[in-house]
Length: 343
Ligand code: SF4
Image (cartoon, rainbow, N blue to C red):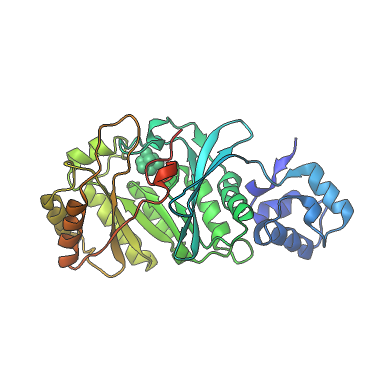
């Protein structure tokens, strides 16, 4: 059976083909075709001998995912992709273009076990983790499809990346490597609902990418309702992990806060968020709060907050010295906005 080349790190690939490829420069040429030139067939490896191309073709696959659906927003340039895996499972990724910068929001799992009540991905039980190759291939396929360079990657599609930590780490290594994707650490954002132990491991791993903590509530009881399988860490533990991450990585931290009408969008909540960030020493220029007005999904009676309430929430944070941004929903017309990536 053929092996999926993208599931191999460069070192693993080298070890696997050592019987047929002895020279390092040939390995480097192959890696360049796969990750830098991003071609989708071995026939396109034109500086490699025909025999070696045939041998690679016999042993490996270069693409394991199929784009089975592609939906384009009529409002902005957002595209929602539905991918099919070899074992006939489906998941999503989104292409986003903001001020000329192309990013992809990628999935790390098929389904999501966290079950956030405001998210359609959380409605589908976890089917399985995506492999290193399946995570990276989302970027390769989207870049091939739009024929433009992708310069930003968000781990904010289906799944909680820290529950697929081994593959997430392999993917980060590939994204950051100049021999592979070569994407700058400031252009990669990893999100988590607060897997404190994994956040510490990532901080110690020196990837130094941006971290987004999905806080969404300042009240423990309410947070448990919004994020039922939230790893059981207290808000204080999560903010402390964020502080540790910042200190260790000198990177950026985003606190994600979804605003749901009459649930967590009051001025009292905003003031409490200010107090929390102050208490955990997160009032700092490398910390930003992203406010995300809830996006409608089927099967829930949660409501979109009023614009003036969102603005008021933002102003309270801003007046208290917090860098705050209202995240505009992109691709809401094709169910590609935050929380809408469901079946
Ligand atoms: S918001 Fe993220 S963590 Fe929560 S259910 Fe959706 S995909 Fe999972």
